[in-house]
Amino acid sequence: MPNKAAKRGRQPPPEEVEAFLAAAESSMARRFAAKYNYDVVKDAPMEGRYEWVRVGP
Image (cartoon, rainbow, N blue to C red; front, top):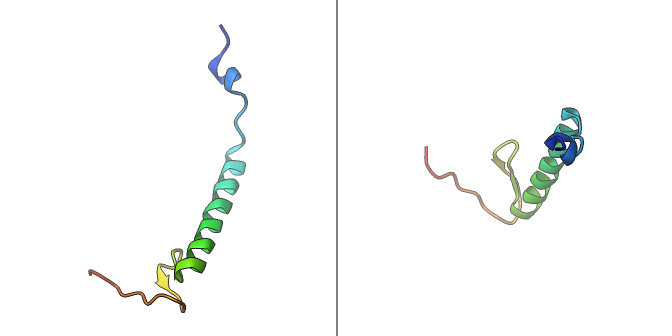
């Protein structure tokens, strides 16, 4: 009976996976910032279409 790992194929190195996910996350953050004028990385509003108001503590 074949090994399950061999059946699935090789996995990419962790560095490659990390680079891929970092690029995807960065792209999503840029699109979100452009659409909602909010920087999710800095957790801060930006100038633009929406006026952000802090809610809560």
